Image 1: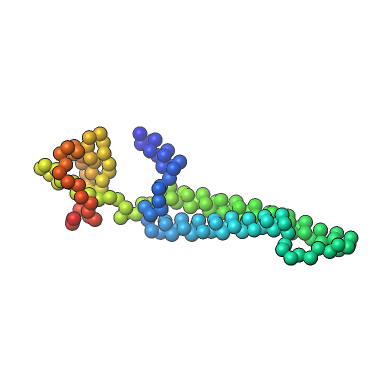
Image 2: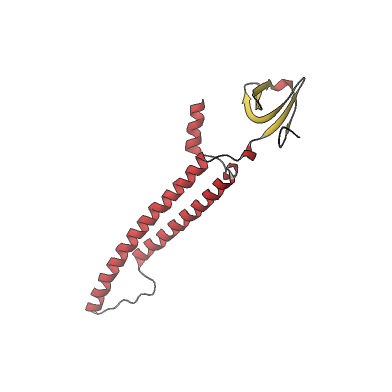
Amino acid sequence: MTALLGVVLVVKGRETVGDLAPWTRVTVAVLLVMAFGGLLGATVLAVRAAAGTPGAEILLTGEGLREWTRIEVKAVARRIWCAALLTLVALSLLVTALGFTWFGPISDSVKPMVRVVTRGESMCGELVGTAGDDVVVKGESLRQTRIDRIVSIEPVKSCGQP
């Protein structure tokens, strides 16, 4: 079951970057902006390679056309090479950003803390989840209690205070 959860995390990733530590969120945002800028630049270079420079004068004399063609072929080759390089850099930045979202540290404030009151005891800690008919809470130790014994569950900011 744990291996399946790990595979889902790698394939799917997190639902939101809001769960990440603050420095990781900023890093992901910067990487995504840089990747977008790189892909935009690559697109502009590819379009200019395909369509030429807007407003460029094309000479219709044989010698002028030959010289323009020689210069333009070099410019097109350079633009295509730069567009390909920018695309690879942008995709690398995108993959790095995805890696940060998948494997980046979780913010400490994201863990849902709850106080579970049953008929006879009170537990406080991180809500881990459910296991069959039990609710699992991780405080100083991992504890569980049956759902039918629970009187109330309330969210708390920390276990010291409600």
